[in-house]
Length: 120
Length: 163
Image (cartoon, each protein chain N blue to C red):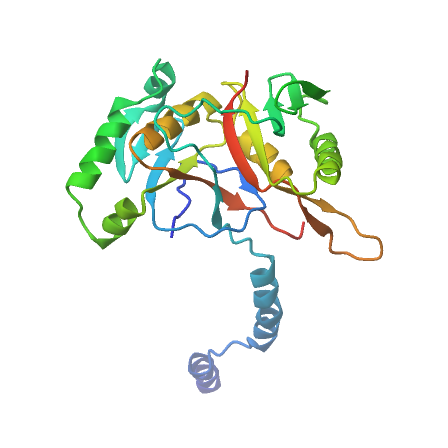
């Protein structure tokens, strides 16, 4: 179960798909956190010119090499990524993360959102 | 003097408060608060992404529904030419217009399930989700019913860069 962290505000959506156990990439206005470890600053991510972010690729590879705990195992083996990004993150940052993930073999990407109240 | 002491003693012995009214209030309040509590649940939106490294390069088949999101507004294209351009209204994207246009497209091509959302690099994530929601499906108010009817439009969404 993915919990919404305090430092980011997820956008609202009407989708009802439940989150699964996947590798989680969190993009707050300050940091990019891959599976619980801050790998680089969001500002640096925006400055990167290429589509492949070395820091993220690195972290994903390290995850595969030393798996700690059952949760990480299912997450890594699923080859799925869930991106939790703050509302204000521009698309080009997300695109870099997405192409980095697909480049590392994580083909299924999901975007996390908060469920909108259906009755409003 | 003795009577006074006796009185004080009785006060200490019986400090019971009459909380019945308070409990009655709680019985009403607790269900009410539980109903009104908003449980923010995290859900996920699945994307269909090309698995090859690099991404971005979307091969356009002969017909595709594309929603191009720009800073000034959005455009609906059919893979080769722009069909409709909708400017921003009061600084916000005109979501109703988008839903209407997509509904019309769905009526023309009922079997079409996939669509592409193309964004300019500086569009915020929030708008991406909003547009994707609109492309995925819409709600139509049904006369004589409180529950709006859900209409599925193009649930299979790919995203990419705006040309």
